[in-house]
Length: 309
Image (cartoon, rainbow, N blue to C red; front, top):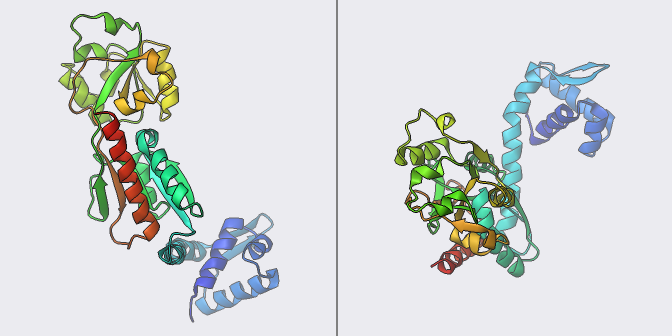
C-alpha cells in the first residue's frame, strides 16, 4: 500500500469541509470518485478514517492521526513549490513579510515602496504582529522574513539575524503636560503618569521602573496604568489628549502629523532604544526575492538613522 500526497489532500479536504460533496468540489473531482478513493484507502490501511452521520463527516482517531502527520507534509510540499518558483527569479511571485508594530512605522513601508517600484509584479503581504507570534509564523513558513525586536528571541540556533541600526527612544508627552513644568525631572516622575506604549515585554518595563527607584514585584505594582496598543496613531492621540506619557523615536516624531503637539522629555535612559533585526530561517535557502528585500530594508533603515543624526 502506498500512501500518496493525493490521499493526504483528500483527507485534509474532507476534514476541513466535513462533507464529501463539498470536499470533492474543493479538490475538483467527482463525489463518487472521492468516495471510492477513501473506501479503497480504508481497505488498504485496514482502518476506518471517517464516521458518517446526518450531522456530517468526522474523522476517526486514524483520520485525525493522518491529518496531524500529513498536514505539515502538505505544507512543506507547497513551500517547496513556492520556493522553486521564487528561485526562478523575482519577476513574479509573493513575498510575505512580518513586522513588529514600531518598525512597521519606522522603515518597513519605505522599504516595501522601493521594492515595489522595481519589482511591480511581486505580490507583497505584510503581517504586523509581536515578536513571539512572528517567530511562530516564521517556523510554520507562513512568512518569509520578519523585522522586529530580537531581544526576546531566546534561541537563535535555527535563525539568521541581521541586526539593524539602533535608534534611541524617548519619553514624550503633550505640550503643556505637568512634567514639562518640572525644573528637575527624573525618571521616577514618568511612572506617576499612565504609560501609553506598544507591546513591551514586562521584564523591560519592570527594569525601567527599578532603575527609577521604584520597589515593585511586577508591572501590576506600578503607580499608574499601562495603556497598550499596537497602533501608533491611537497611542499618539492618547498622549496628545491626556496626561499619559508615550515612547517614541525621533524619526517617527519628525514625520508625525502631531509633531507640534508632542514634546520630548529630557530623560536619559540608554536601554530605551530599538534593537531590531531581519530574521529568517537559516536551514532554508533564501530565495532571490527575500535577499533583495533584505537590501531594501537595510537601506531604508540606514536612511531613517541618518535623518535623525
